[in-house]
Amino acid sequence: MSRSAHPAGPRHADVLPEGHYAAPPADLNALDPKVWARTVDRGADGVVTVGGMSVVRLAEEFGTPAYVLDESDFRARARAWRTAFGAGADVFYAGKAFLSRAVVRWLDEEGLNLDVCSGGELATALSAGMAPERIAFHGNNKSVQELERAVRAGVGRIVLDSFQEIVRVAHIARELGTRQRVQIRITVGVEAHTHEFIATAHEDQKFGIPLAGGQAAEAVRRALQLDGLELIGIHSHIGSQIFDMSGFEVAAHRVVGLLKDIRDEHGVELPEIDLGGGLGIAYTSDDDPREPHEIAKALTEIVTRECEAASLRVPRISVEPGRAIVGPTAFTLYEVGTVKPLDGLRTYVSVDGGMSDNIRTALYDAEYSVALVSRASDAEPMLARVVGKHCESGDIVVKDAFLPADLAPGDLIAVPATGAYCRSMASNYNHVLRPPVVAVRDGEARAIVRRETEEDLLRLDVG
Ligand code: LLP
Picture: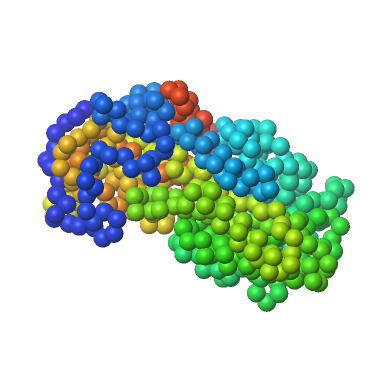
């Protein structure tokens, strides 16, 4: 790796971005434990390590870019959710955040269930040996083939998302001579305080059946009439990257209200309620996420209180955290390729990945932090923008960040909190190959998803 010198970029005094990076951090070498995986540390030699492995060694062995995942942190977070909710509740990890066979095995060992939302996720779960009854199947437009496969496999629950699906699943189950356990996903009319694209409980959108206008009650009526279905509960997911518990409070209040109406109309007390996922994580030092035990306590109290007020038995609660488990456990390791200071503006730092391995910045204006990890530096802070190698000016990984002014091609930098929705939303844009996911634990590293090759790319090109 070269450490060539280059002209120093503009200093932060020249241009100040608004928001999180209005001022450089006091120490650019410090790694805020809020945003970095738990075993990440900077050694006396200045090189960052994770699970006892140096990032320089990881880059040599696995190349860059690479998602580096701290396995013990993943397991600890999964366990913390499991323990916080206890035996009276279920935790379904949302596989859409990041799924691989190793992850399925970890979840299995840590006692979590799994939420899948496509045939591909279901196939991954089953092929890694997850017991089908511990799988929940989600989605607003599951195909008939996907549904059939799920029913045949014996998944623990299918979350019904439309009137058509109620009929489809009932029909499939009857044909297969079985009764499928189902929940109905409703939209409770909550405006979650998050990005529009990841808010899911307001009425004007594609997910769920609206509580408003009696539609959810009608869906329940139909599901209860069909002998292919065993209606076990109501599901609500209000959105993603949420910090404020008040949205969950309103959702729980409305879901319990529906349970009460169901009891009054049908004489049935549904035994389960699923409050979805969506708990936020720290992407930058400004974010203050809650711990699983606080969330478990708050949600359990809300549901218990609402049920007591409605004279209902407290149903079994389930939750579906994805980001909150895997998000903080990984960082993306990049090699700096070019450093381009633009006078009076900022310095563009180009890395060997970009929007194909992290689309979140372009898609949601997501904020990330970044650090030089292959060495320490006591150079002055330089206002930087970390960009990728794609043919698009919106190809930004970190919009505003301070990096040391002596940053040079060949340096390794890392973007923390990229465990969720980065590899799982990665693309082959510009025929760039998707990076591996490298799991590190106790001084050992292994790829749990290998790097894509040109052969992989060309295999699909059959023209
Ligand atoms: N349950 C359901 C029904 C969901 O739709 C989702 C996420 C989850 C659970 C998990 O949410 P989490 O705890 O991970 O926030 N691509 C976006 C996030 C989309 C979330 C979709 N549904 C992002 O990168 O922020």
